[in-house]
Length: 339
Image (tube, rainbow, N blue to C red; front, side, top):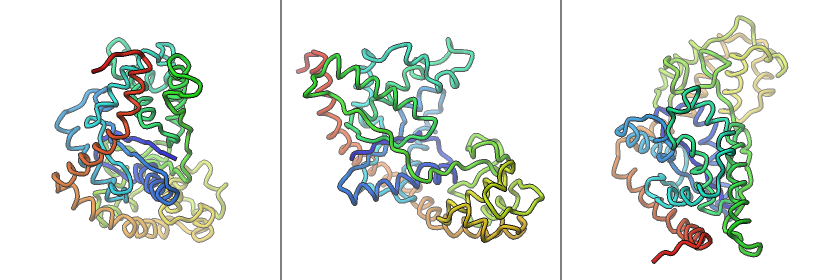
């Protein structure tokens, strides 16, 4: 098994990032190491330039993301951790795959429609071909599995379509150029919502810092945010069905369950009938206890730019070694002459 996954270096990581993706990356790393598999995790900085960005921020956010991943448990000695820009084979393979991808396929991509909005003529070409680069990201390493959430299923299906068409057009039945990656649905991929609005995802783009728990927040800040989180006046129910129609209560209980490793049912068995005056301090204490070591390691790492650059450089060297054979095979299959 070879797992490949990427994350955009957006900066200002929060609890939603940790519980929704990063913690599962750590679990996959541990499982892969135990079974003889391999994980490649990359910072998608090439994807980031498909939208307007500040160059200095992109570089700083890339390093900050490395610090966060390592602080959360990603081990550069057991996983390959790198950024796309140091592995030019990603961009090269994207160009080769552009000959196989079809305009109609890309026009149907939901993310393109959402991000381009009504001003499609003003959107960048990079935004339109973003899914082809995503396909290159995984096909380049002959990935067998790609972790996907609901918002990424369409992109993996496109990658498989591109790989299948390329294999049919330029490969042979006995020697296909690309492995068709299978979706991997991580267990317990928690969907964490805003502390101010239980119907909206926790996001760094929310103007209110009180809407999220940042990985840089200290214990006092975490407790303050939890105590001020939006709730309703009713006590917690004794069963899961009682959370329906109560998005803020459901969110806080879900966070407690995810951080404690318990089920929602177990949390409600303990706190059912109690008001938020008792539950919120318990949640705050749990979060500060669990996040304190991550916070301390993150703050330490983010100040050592040389160490972070070394992690990315070494990871990129390993990634390039895996990428070159696939890229060479794609060039050869297309009949392109190279010295």
